[in-house]
Amino acid sequence: MEQTGKKGMGYVLRRLLSCVGEYRKYVILTPIVMIGEVLMEVLIPRVMAKIVDVGIANSDTSYTIRMGLIMVGMALFSLLCGALGGRFAAVAGMGFAKNVRAKLFGKVQDFSFANVDKFSTASLITRLTTDTTNVQNTFMMLIRTAVRSPFMLICALIMAISLNAKLATVFLVAIPVLGGVMAFITITAYPRFGKMLEKYDALNERVQENLIGIRVVKAFVREKYEGDKFVASADEVRAAQVHAEKIVILGMPAMQLSMYGCILAVLWFGGNMTARGDMLVGELSSFISYITQILMSLMMLSMLFVMTTISIASAKRITEVLDEVPDIDDEGADKSLVPADGSIVFDHVSFSYSGEHGNYALKDIDISIKSGETIGIIGGTGSAKTTLVQLIPRLYDTVEGVVKVGGRDVRDYSLENLRNDVAMVLQKNVLFSGTIKENLKWGNENATDEEIEEACRQAQAHDFIMSFPDKYETDLGQGGVNVSGGQKQRLCIARALLKKPKIIILDDSTSAVDTATDAKIRDAFAEHLADTTAIIIAQRISSVQHADRIIVLDDGRIDAFDTHENLIKNNKIYREVYMSQQKGDEE
Image 1 (cartoon, helix red, strand yellow):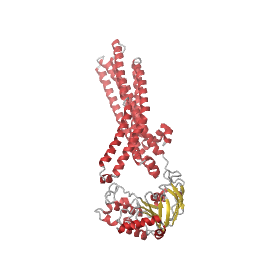
Image 2: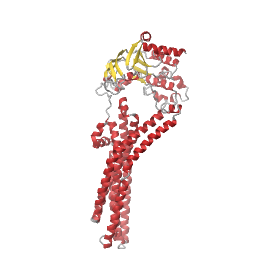
Image 3: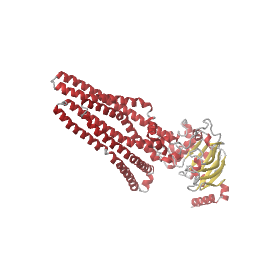
Image 4: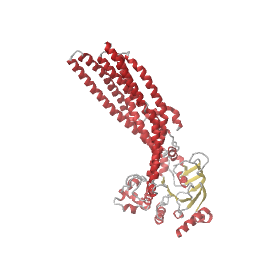
């Protein structure tokens, strides 16, 4: 993250502007039509001055009407340019934000678990939403105001000087004062907005955590506790926002003070000039219009400074994600290479979540699994059972040693080819919005109805699916809220089976089903997945005792690796777990 900060704002801007893409023409058209609007607005006061000083002063009705019609035409053209500018800016801004979000989301899809952990899910959501919206709003304002306001300022200043150079000197006092105030605001407010966005991250984390665990919250009647935590987090956002905004709000009073001061000065000195005959009434009226235009331009520029100050922090946070290098990639891998079979070798593997040597979650794992074997894994909480199997499809990479699948280092395969041959049913069963069939097709998008039904029969899911009125077209709702925990597990197993993988990993994925259903699933595996390597992580020994061999993990090390019968005889940890579970079953 620090690298992005060192590269400076120039780099950040270039990085984000590359997201303009196909909306470039709207970005170019917006300032062009804005220039047309400004030219008309600047010329209108001169035409008005002519109407007052020539048409009305000389009672020339035809001249007054002719110039009035010209002024109306100019106003309509200015209105057209303004409307087009607003539309072009909106299209460009929304398209730019769409591309930024698409690029961010695509980048996050390439992240490993370690990359996601580095930012946190809540922070990534903030960057995809709040930060991108901040940058979008500033971008829209920039392509309009960053051209319109300076151009208006210059043109109106030229016109004011051409009318009365002496009177125009009042701006020499106002402009430097405003410039100093804006510089102070920008320098002071930027770090405060950065802190505010960090508070937004924390707020999003609270909301996400609460909504994911809403059933637990209600089960323990902790709504008030969670509500208090949310209010405290929201109050921290408010305090950080106030802390930042109280600097920003100085801009408007400074702007108004300068504007009204200039108007008073012009009315005083201009009124005296008019009284002496050094200046016509229409010219004074036009001069006041130009003062308004100049000061309004300065006000818009000050607002642009404020928005830019806010969005600088957001832009850097977005760039941090875009610049993050996924710590797992398949560059240099043979894209045509696929695992020959389901054999697995852990060759003196050690792993640490920090990615550094020491503080290992797994230590010196050295085992070999034949293709087609069924392997059970037993171990206490925190013994790194899940960590071990996550190294097989390269959800994490080893710190030391090599993991081999099909006789080759997993890093030799492309991630797509490796993961297509390794099906994994995670500890936390995740389903998505949509129908049962749509969720199952994650395993194989080209699967036929017959293949889907067969996978569900093997996973013991077909019967309960057929009990629903819409059967396989049943809408699961967000996260599968319409099915029970056991049904969700069986659907996830069926989804994995549809991949027809060489290796299938079940990470405690039958914990929510009864022992009879668990036994049927194991029987179906034995019958239909004879050539598939199956790795089953379980808390119940009954779920793994029929495996060819069983790994006993203890504190990240392999305590034993043998058959059920031999482990009962020779391994203390396994025997104690078995006896305690047998006793519990008897009771």
